[in-house]
Length: 393
Image (cartoon, rainbow, N blue to C red; front, side, top):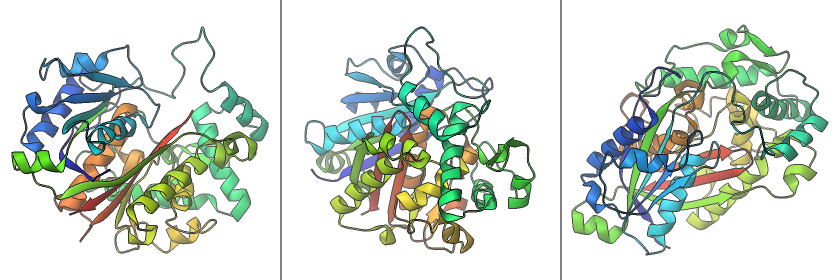
């Protein structure tokens, strides 16, 4: 498989539930922005993968028909919080295999306020086995499920390595410093670690409100092309997807008896390992990372899963400032999910948007100086993890 060119990206500002345009309008706008960025018309797109979690079937067609009705295959994708990157993964495969030359990946989400919950209550949940495992590992009655999963993973790290609660607060404070410079982030107010620690407690000793990302609405898109297509249409080839891997759960998810595994630590570790091996590089070669910080706890454990630091060393990584500007690897320069919010279907493609701009050198106030190698991590419970490596050519 050859490298795939990221020809164009688009993203609309994320908003609070109830304040956004309808899902199809967000998808339409993000698509038009990505096509304009690539300098291409919709008629050049040969296939589209459209990601969303909360919506009826064929919402992808509803969004894209307002861009054009060219009769192309449109595939609707739902893979929980990794939905956007799953659409990107499928689009990249079609080009890398030589089957197609120009493919669109779009993600959007129109969300409701409050904690995530099941829509269909008349049938078994995909999380039944995960919930049962969490019940055995965590005694947290009344804590919403997503908080219990990721807070439980953070609690596991705290117990294993003596990680203090303020380590998660420092992650959230760092996110706010980065988001201050991102006009597309929903929350741009800078907060300190003390502010985070003194915020509303939602799980005593484990989590405050600011350590959790909010549900938001939004849309993002990317146009991927082959090298020959780029040459034919005069498209810049600066940013390439050099490697990508998608993993799902293995027996260790349930057999390890560890909340960190239950929320995808091994999935992330394996996907990153495959990507590093495929690209012939290691984590020390990375300049910038956008990772799935749905909770500050998940950002912290993901540092270790991706090899940004050794196991048990995330606290030191944070204290040394190695996760921000001037440190070893700038993580979530966009402000991440903690500051942008998390419209499930759009999240992975919003990460792609940020990293593409970083490697182009057009990220403005969030720019990581001299960025040439970027890593993206997008996780969905239930489960799936997509890790993508971008290089500047």
